[in-house]
Length: 470
Ligand code: 6PG
Image (cartoon, rainbow, N blue to C red; front, side):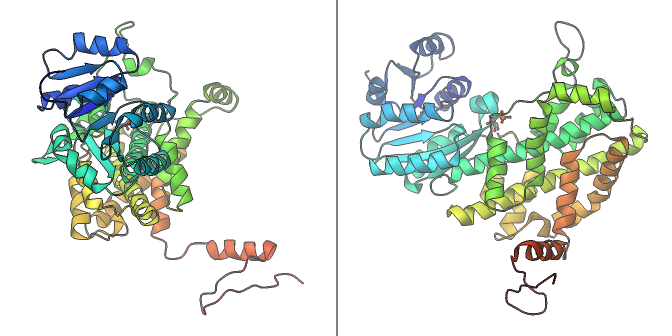
């Protein structure tokens, strides 16, 4: 190749890789692209790349040759074995201080391992969560990088230009050592699952419980999206209720099977939250409900055998404001659970996370971007060590003011037999976390009774055992 070398190489031309390459080129960077199967590269170059400053590479050697030194290569391949395979091909072709960035949804433990392996080879490595789907990648995603700080600083100007911008600030920040970036992205997805579940439950209550149809649902979610509930997931929910199926003319949402797939990041969040003993019941119930949704045959059988829900015994005009409050309380509680997990993980894995920065970079580009995040950012900005968002002098009372709505919605759902495990888990979390005393004195007594596991006393220090029966 003649002329100056490329600023960055994008490896993997799937939807995310292609759009990021275009985004980077549009921001004025010279981009090299490489895909394992050359057809994709050729197609990309002839169709989408256009006149942009993008250079195709036919193999990893050619890619290494195209990159300015120290090199920076951004991997946009599926999480798992493909990442290891690309690193295996690429690492021998790189020099000391070159940088590999993994922009996929890798499990944080894989990122931790890869960071160690590459460090031994003298190479830099960043694990970077990228959120925003194809549109985010193309126009500006939220970027969550972690790894060596010096390596981040080197690509920071490039990442800042590629990222979404909110109030003149790019939605990217150095998050911490090792796997910090992928950990934050994992929890982002956990919160994404939780809020999607809460919205899905609200839809079920309105549609199955009250008989609202897509046009009315579109109007309601659209209205909610204008206020404190505003955010990307509310916005697309409103949009979905407008779309008709080109084949049948029915509303498309009504033509979609009620079984949700998942790539695993929600479950990973739940797994690690359990490991670190940081409660995330709204996220856990979202993962559980996606699993339950796949048991369609059994659900139909049980519906035939046992019957299911009745209609809600409330007028839409009475129920809708309660549901709005329930969703808002649920949104704060979902963020509260996710951010508390991040605080715990930061301590456990030594990430040194700054939760104000995390909330700041989630304000734009990503799937969970929401109006609320500006306030969450301020909450952590004002009190950096905040143990729970519910201790914030504004947010805690706000949740309590909305809790009446949440309670009423949960009660109505339970009375009608409409499943609302996400809303119920959110309320249970709020009530349990506010309980100065929970019944675990009894659990300790039982453990000591059957297993001699000992207990602590309220009136003196130490560990005690009682002979409960003669
Ligand atoms: C994002 C998303 C994205 C994720 C999809 C699908 O932030 O852009 O989180 O990374 O892959 O939302 O996730 P599931 O298949 O697990 O639902």
